[in-house]
Image 1 (cartoon, rainbow, N blue to C red):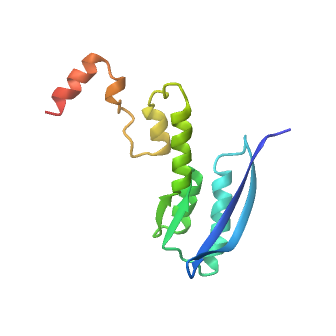
Image 2 (cartoon, rainbow, N blue to C red):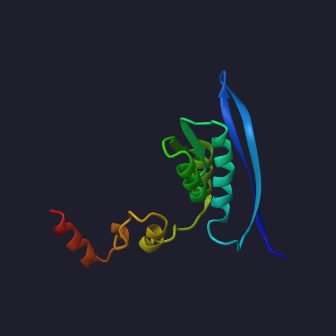
Image 3 (cartoon, one colour):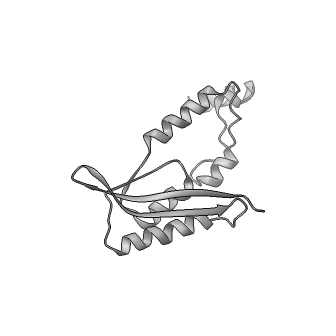
Length: 139
């Protein structure tokens, strides 16, 4: 039996300072689903909402790249922000762990964000010789 991730999405509008649900999407995505499966479903759902004339000034999501990509694809002019509740929860979870964070991997970062230089290494992960070269190359 394949495992799946189940998620509920909502399109919500502001009506006199109150949240007005416009549409919901419940999606179950298999863990081993083809790449972009979730993003494709989100684009189709958001596209149907856009076809009704909905043009948001801003969008809100957690830090899920497929959600962010779908929002940018459907409403490229809307300002996007991350949900404060999700950010605070992520920080609390990270700070509650008593282990060291994994090392930064520039290749992984570049695969998600092409503008990141694959050769970048944080100073804390550099050897002493690399730090000296970096110090002198910037001054």
